[in-house]
Image (cartoon, rainbow, N blue to C red; front, side, top):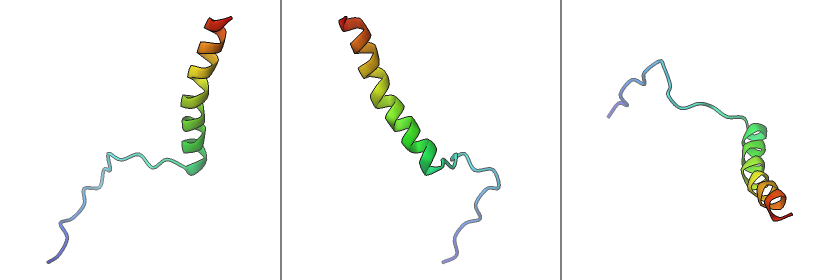
Length: 40
């Protein structure tokens, strides 16, 4: 069986591993910063 042709426009955005780590670290650090400021 042959695979169906993929559409030229890909909805999936290719993310670099560096930016992915940056996003994950931001998601982890931002709530900690917010709770830290609110806790003071």
